[in-house]
Image (cartoon, rainbow, N blue to C red; front, side):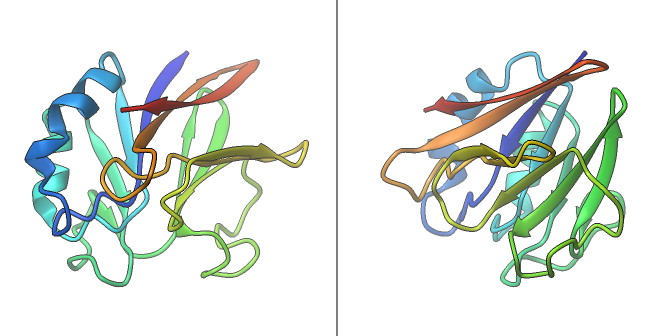
Amino acid sequence: MSRIGLIADTHDEAVPWDRVHNKVSEAFEGVELILHCGDLTTLHVLDRLGSIAPVIAVRSPGDPQAVPGRLFDGPHVLERDGKVIGLVNALGEDGPNPFGRPVDVIVHGGTHVASIDSNGVILLVNPGSPTLAERVTVGLLETGPDHTEAVIVPL
């Protein structure tokens, strides 16, 4: 079973990361991986998240240039416990299936509003924003061979 931290839309220029880092660290206690859906605006955010667990992130148009193995240009796919997870900045901006293969979970940002939806086949998770939202949040994803569950964590 894997426990993964989900975060998006950190917008470090709007609310300095130092103001939310402790709350995010508490929410992500025990995660083995963090997925960031873009709109981080500075690599500093990835450095701070990296002190909690390894980070995989996708760029948004306003983010720094891609960093091999760390900050990916465009959609990214990874597998955990037999589940295929697609990571994208915002739904729809890269087409209906930007991953080039079927996925079990899509983690996305872009709206600053947390949500968990399912169409019966794909679990869609938007962790919201820990900085720029009426309700600041992150998400957690648990995967196992016969288990996939997401929750939104208010900060």
